[in-house]
Image 1 (cartoon, one colour):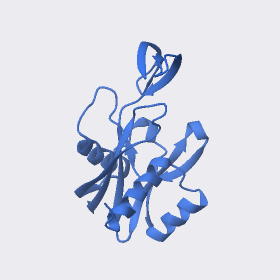
Image 2: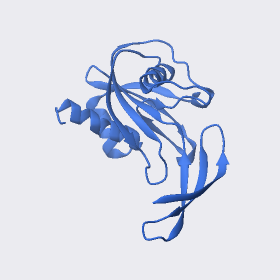
Image 3: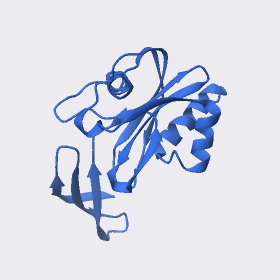
Length: 178
């Protein structure tokens, strides 16, 4: 597939949408819409055979759901995925990680966006005050035992695909799968 042209359709401080004219292998032309967003980090904060989760109202789906702490750098800030993971964990939960392990790099919606996430496991946790962004004012943080987290995944209280995919990577690492 080859890009023939691209035009910006929309932009704000969190994302942009572009429309690309493309040529397929057979020579036919088409349109591809692409949502560009910065990459993000997902942090599995694990201790005492359980996990720290956050919950906030998610406007696009009209509800509150528990998920692993996650996010991207705000507009104008950059850094490494590791720096981002430390920052998101601290901002959303107040926890500081003594150890952070990288589990993988995943695409969330690769049919429409190049945005990816890096998944980390945080351990050796030290509590502190969160420093949430204005959009996270209603966020709650709570520790859950592992069996309850898995129940929440099965019964739909956890619906975030990044959280579910991160947990799958966690289980694979735990089981020693390569």
